[in-house]
Amino acid sequence: DTEVTQTPKHLVMGMTNKKSLKCEQHMGHRAMYWYKQKAKKPPELMFVYSYEKLSINESVPSRFSPECPNSSLLNLHLHALQPEDSALYLCASSQERLAGPNEQFFGPGTRLTVL
Amino acid sequence: QKEVEQDPGPLSVPEGAIVSLNCTYSNSAFQYFMWYRQYSRKGPELLMYTYSSGNKEDGRFTAQVDKSSKYISLFIRDSQPSDSATYLCAMRPLGGGYNKLIFGAGTRLAVHP
Image (tube, rainbow over all chains, first blue to last red; front, side, top):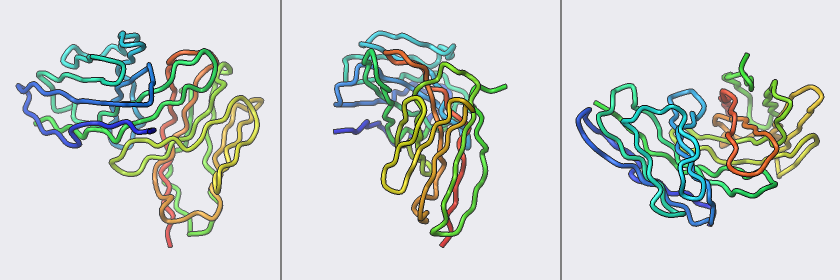
C-alpha cells in the first residue's frame, strides 16, 4: 500500500470556525509532512513530524496547529483562518533511513476555502 | 537567486513529441533529485528519483542529472495527452532523516492531439 489518504477532499469554513484536516498512511513511514499549495505555485512546507514529534515548523501562524496522534495519523487543526489561507493542503510521508532518498509520497490534498 | 530554477512554461507540444523538462540548481550539496507529476487539483505523484549523476529510465520517462553543470532533465518520449500536467523537480542533500525537499516552480505541460 503506497497510499496517503486525506479527508475531507473539500472544506469551506468561515473565519470564526474551527475545523480539522486528517491524513493517514500505512506504509510504516516515520516522517509526515504538511504542505500548503497555492495555485500555480510549488508546495510550501509547513510542518514536519519525525517519530511523532514536531521537528520542523516553518514559522507557520498559530492559527494552524498540527498534531500527530500516532505513527499513521497526522492532523492539522484550523482556527480563526483568513481568506488568504485558502489553498490546497497536502500531506506527505516518507521513510527516515540513514541513507537513501527518503522520497516523499503525497496525498490528494484538501482544498480549503475560507470565507 | 533561488536554489532551484525551473521554467514555469507553459510548454505546448503535439502528441508523439519528445518533451524535455529541465531544472538548474545552485546548491552543490544536493544529491537526490526527484520528479513529480501533478494533475490539476490533485496531489503530486512521484515519477522517479535519481541519486547523484547519471541517467535513469522508466518506460517513456528518462531522468538525467549532470552535477558538473548543476542541471537535471526529464525526457518524455512519445508524449500523450494524458501527460498534460505540471511537472515539479525537487531535490535534497545527502543524509538520512526527513530532510527538506526543495522544489522548482513547476513546468506546465500541454500535449495536444
